[in-house]
Figure 1 (cartoon, rainbow, N blue to C red):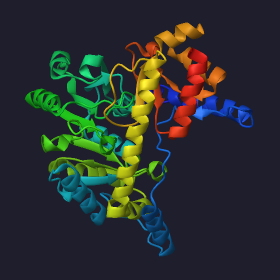
Figure 2 (cartoon, rainbow, N blue to C red):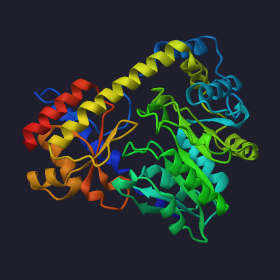
Figure 3 (cartoon, rainbow, N blue to C red):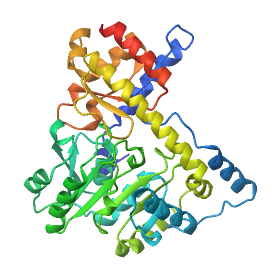
Figure 4 (cartoon, rainbow, N blue to C red):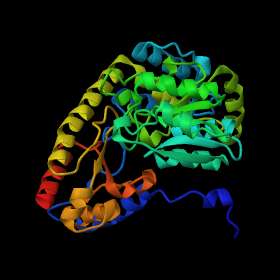
Length: 394
């Protein structure tokens, strides 16, 4: 069977490869004194709050499961618009909001609508691997630009300007970012977008962790800068609806009919049950619960990262959002007599029954140095993970 070239260009998702190995070992040690602790997957340990679950049950019980419009339920688009106004003080008209089958579908739609074969899209290194693969699937090329702790592992306007060529179509950013949990300062993002505008390009920004920002200076949407920015968001992270596969995108008005045509043909619509359930995300009781959980995620960050630092797993930049720690594993690897973060991840899995993610997925600039820890697990699990790391690394 001949496999399409575009499919062959997609690399394995190593996060999942490591996860499979961790699951296999977890099964073997599940009845032992140290069952596996999973700090490798970026999935909240919280589930959808009660009002959301009840809304889903009502939708199913009433038979309200038919297709919706390709752009999403009008009521849900209005609720999302209201959230931008209340949370960020930004006017985002509902007519510019497209509800999608997860942020993944939003990224696919955006790339198909805006990227031509041969186009290049600038992205920071490190960054979330699937984002560059959406560019590749649209016949474009992701150009990874190495970043530094001083830049918060984000692109700068200077680097965008220097890397721009005749083939460059635009930038694909993430703020807060996976794997670093760091955001782009609003002033710098404004400068980046200015460079892109000067060259007639596009600014795409993944804001799926925006609700999980912990510092006011960074917790601002890029949509406050300009109407021609395309923002991707999701109900998975802040709203704790990972498996419901529901997201949205905000696009310039002239792009709405283009995205609608693509969505009609590729997806028909996002899950009707999930859309009706998501209406309840914006009820005051639900928002209060989400804010309680956001405070819990921050408390986990504030506990776990200093502990990593003490153990020689240096985190060069304190995350201002999301639930990740991008830690330098050089000292830990040397202590355990292994080479690089891939072997270190397996050593932690085998010797401490602790699953973490090596840096290989996230770019080509020094991936062997770094591990990504997810702090989306409970405080109890994080404390036990520290105890095991302390016993192993001293």
